[in-house]
Length: 179
Image 1 (cartoon, rainbow, N blue to C red):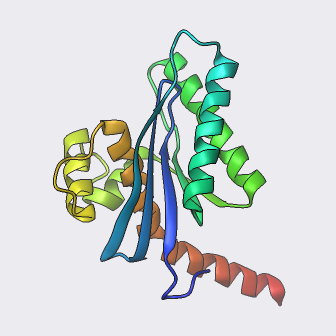
Image 2 (cartoon, rainbow, N blue to C red):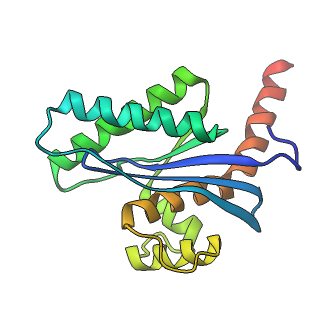
């Protein structure tokens, strides 16, 4: 998929309608990962849904255009007590998945427990544990804030950890299919 010397740029998205966390990480190796962008995109709750989704789409497209990621990693809604929250997260996730497909960018979803496990070693880690590990793994001087941005960085780190294995699996499937 990528040459050893080529950097892998991953856009991590923690989807949300009011607060959508993002992190763009550039990695030469698991030991050398740089933060290109980290933050939260917001939309006002007073706006109509279609306007909020449009604003997020434009913001995400601009971020993609500026950072040129090789892959986009999105947190997958696995379970949510609040139906309204689950719906809005699902809408933003769908927007990102469709946008990545349209732009020809590899897109992958990870559950919260997969992300926590990849970043902290425990699928049941709490928000603070995730923030501390993101801070440590990215060499940040302080905890990444807000939590949505830290979660997006954790999602991108998860993908960076899984990408080499995923690439090998895809290569094997392609080799078998070519026979």
